[in-house]
Image (tube, rainbow, N blue to C red; front, side, top):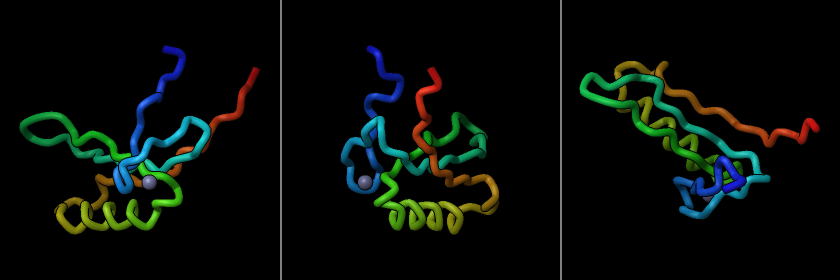
Length: 80
Ligand SMILES: [Zn+2]
């Protein structure tokens, strides 16, 4: 109950991404007409090739490529 992101799995290799590892986040910023946005997909940084491939697939399938965002989330250092 202490972790806020305890069960994130890599969309490429299906293995869990540990809290202490940075990860790649592929987000769909486009709200679909009938419902919710696609949920973000997470990747290991070492699975970056798969992340970029997924991003490219999203862009290729969309008429609005700008709505997809692939970002690297770094592990935040303990502030206190
Ligand atoms: Zn992975």
